[in-house]
Length: 159
Image (cartoon, rainbow, N blue to C red):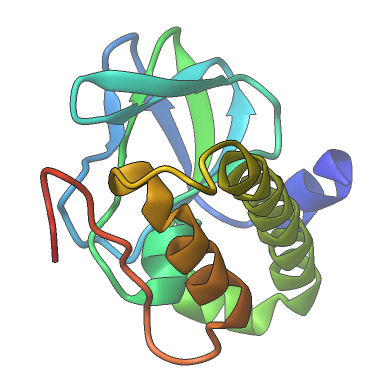
């Protein structure tokens, strides 16, 4: 699908980033999407690297666009990078249902992975009375949530 996705984006402007260049900054609201053409980026939550991505066709900024929230992570170039830039991600996804469908499949795969991980945690800590015992509540909220945004909170953000 990445070749098809890149072909569908060919009319978008190209953005080039040097190593260390920031595509998306955690906490900012831009409405922007990027589709990686070449290079490698890191995904950072605070100062913690949560992933490295170098696959052409990878999309960044989708969570922020779909949830109308600030970016939840920083995307920073590890090498010289080239990406298609879409300044109005919401309109772009609305106007390109095949890209939106690809994105929906990607997000469903992520959710499936996280849900499987939480089920494993639930089994491991079913009788635990610490904060890990709340895994059951988090899992139930994720699985059955159909309404407004769910925010599980954490020790740093108990809300």
